[in-house]
Image (cartoon, rainbow, N blue to C red; front, top):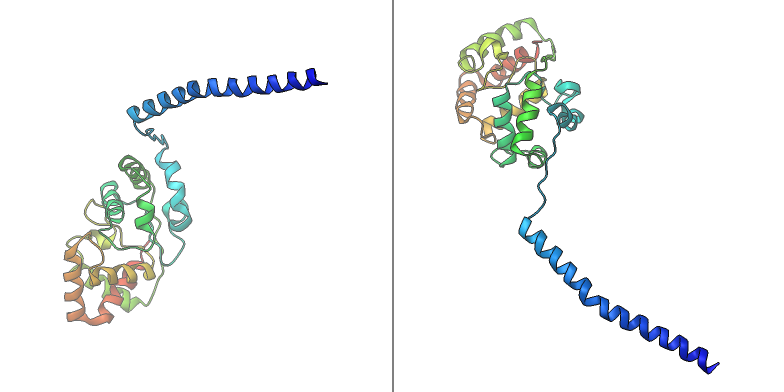
Length: 219
């Protein structure tokens, strides 16, 4: 009995000693790995995702293929690549106020933003076509050309690098966005703030509403 107890005790001591002996070696390995990681820096993240794959995260708000089905969300299909990149960068850099787009834009690299913009630039724009009173639409068409036509060509349908597509957007979105410009909350163009102020001074809210009715009636 005493021999058995002695043998178990001896085995326990050997295991403990073995652990103590191995511990410094394990610490050396851990130290080497830590130094190697510090030297190489953090791992580089390469998504490798296509523009179409990245765009999947946009469709919950902006609709399938970027053609919005909701009154407060813009259609982003057909937008100029350069214009969309500029918009996303200004959201990301907090140059344009937003509720959620600023946080979303911060999650993408420059290359990913360019890939998404190129993808949406190649998709046809489908306008809301909201209709409206014929007389109001006719008035809005004239006022759009007078106050907005210098930059927003073809009745707001031109998708060039300096302006987004306005014709065919939802009226609620247009109302909110133009209000943002009037308040100076969007950095894309301070010229817009002056134009809207001029429009309101000369035509009143009815003039602005007529332009919105005209634009949203387009397809």
